[in-house]
Image 1 (cartoon, one colour):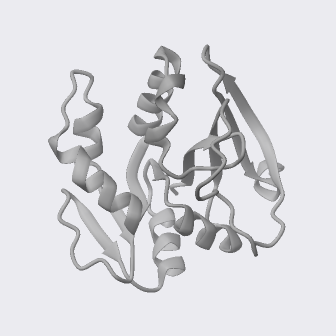
Image 2 (spheres, one colour):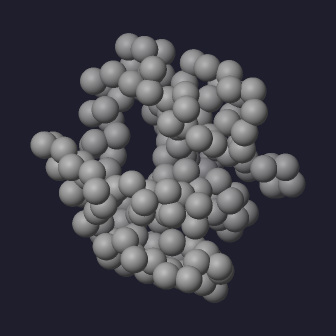
Length: 185
């Protein structure tokens, strides 16, 4: 059985939108290795349309010696969208309807983590159904002041349990949470 892992760059004030505008001053060797290890522990990506379109426009032309770009480009990608006309990035499949059932089916397949990057609307739609098994919040020491936040108004109260922390040299802290009921099992 696979687990769905939500991985977010997030500011102190909860913003996840446009991390390319504020994330890079806080990168170091540790954060780079963390993201590398995270991607290589994944067996597929699960993305919302906006994140998918941004990634699909950028990643196919990227290269690096470590193989990060090759991994991003070769992994199976599932994009949740009712409006996306086509998904032309290598190994991409569009999930247009029955999202909860389709993701539940993906989780039941044996394999590595199903990794969600960004995709706030997708994440918010999965929380009420208990489909996120792990939340990895890469908290950056910055207040952005504007932008889309991870958890939207209107979500029911959801209790999480802190299962791991990691701190990096430029002040980034990764807080890893699991649903409280799953963390106690």
